[in-house]
Image (cartoon, rainbow, N blue to C red; front, side):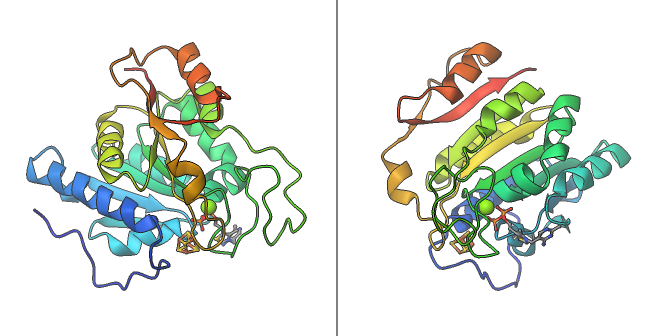
Length: 249
Ligand SMILES: Cc1ncc(C[n+]2csc(CCOP(=O)(O)OP(=O)(O)O)c2C)c(N)n1
Ligand code: SF4
Ligand SMILES: [Mg+2]
């Protein structure tokens, strides 16, 4: 198994689910390199600015740290310059849905062959707790002390409507489930979007909320039905579905 660790000290808060994402990703990439499915030298990872972005310091792979909201244009340029590379990005909910939304929807529309993992903690965490475009209505944080007055985007239906050819969600605490979804996303040819629910235990601790609500959808159902995918991700039954909602080959 290749050593994908680095000497950098991990500075995420103790217990932050970002560490679970890191563990899952190292395992997935380690297995793919060991089985010769991927070569380390052909993998490029990019990240935005935020707590999520620190992951690039903890991976012994080619990594690129972009500006806040800008990992997608960096990834697109890398992929266009050398189509043989596997380009994988780590982004935040603020990074992809507040600051960098235009890049996300166009990458989805153009079906750029890159993989985007969004560490979705529904908050600007690194800057200590402001509302993003994915924070729920009523969220109380530094920028919304009386409660967020705005409705969030439904991130998955937005990306589906924009044309992404692979759309999935997983839960960071379910490391095996995250490994499965990451593997499928990396194998997909085209724009793969994965929402990773990653509670920020310091500025918006949603662990109790999600642990009782997440469930895995039927993995055997046909995945190329866009209407069914939108129905699943917009259902208002109080539960939070996980799995691959849509894949167009
Ligand atoms: C262009 C630009 N705008 C704003 C900032 C300030 N900033 C740095 S990190 C951050 C929040 C990141 O939030 P998110 O993308 O959700 O990542 P998280 O920290 O939650 O992982 C902001 C607003 C910046 N560095 N650059
Ligand atoms: S602030 Fe939140 S997201 Fe950032 S390291 Fe701490 S727990 Fe994790
Ligand atoms: Mg965030």
